[in-house]
Length: 240
Image (cartoon, rainbow, N blue to C red; front, side, top):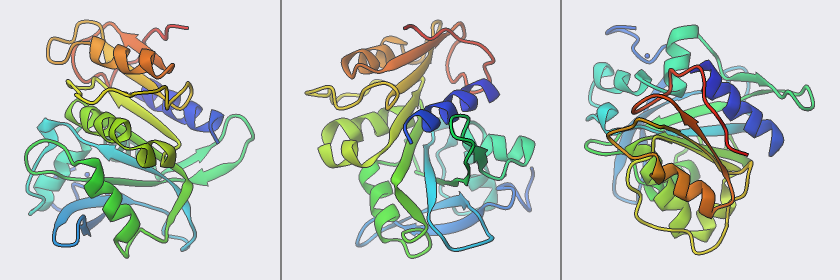
């Protein structure tokens, strides 16, 4: 997993929750406004020292992490894989030093929980733009999307269906993406703006799903000799 996140933050450089009681590991639990009428529970890990704008990573969870958000235990599933798992396992606080220029940033980390699949990008985008707790904390020149399985599918469907979404994000990093349905009409993304990861032996979501997107977008994909998920993988091969 450290390998995957190292790659993620190298990518950023080039284009620049425990048991009941505290399953979110000091992340902020919040009912985010996701439409004019509705909300989704979610969590955020952010710099508590100030109120300035921060580069932001939005995590789209997989089906296994879906839940009602009605309890800490439900929201705690968001730390099963990915960004919030790193927070849980290592106490990482979102602080990253850019390996290119040496500048240190504190990233805001956000995940919303969907009840059945994974949040859709329009709901996430509405929250980013309209929810009072985060809308003024985001550096809109540095918004990154990453997602697992169903989450990879929803983030790819989102950026491929809307030029606005595609132009507004700095990079997308799908992991073991499920069968996304909307194909990009043009190469909106190029490496390093698009970098996907997928297991060569994935029997749940074929690796061709990730390869097709990255190839059609002139991006890069890293194939890993494992099955589904791969957030805990420590090796992989990135085709040139």
